[in-house]
Length: 101
Image (cartoon, rainbow, N blue to C red; front, side):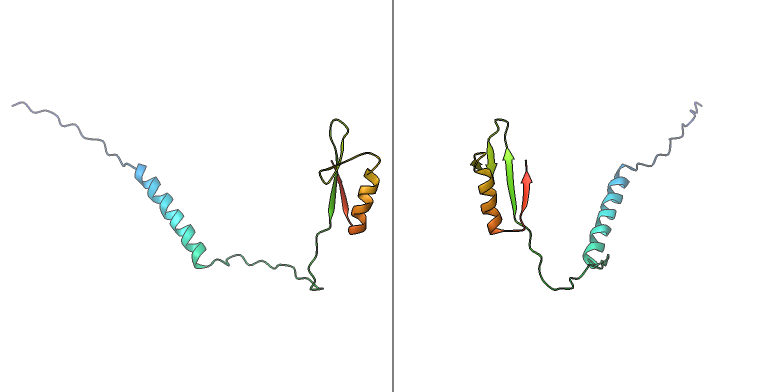
């Protein structure tokens, strides 16, 4: 009688699908918690004491290119007319900001 020894098979757990399932579960709970209570983090935002809206200051851009050409708000200007152009903008908005490029 020829009896062969039986080889025991190795026990393996395939976890490749487990990673996908855990990712989708985590994504589901993350989205579900955001939908259920969107105001989880409550911030104390500062309130205005005067009740007036602040307005942005007018900014005028003065730029000079590599050929020494002057521009005021992307409009060409000469070196002589540069001061008068800035003064014209200053009459419109006395508290303007000048940005030099």
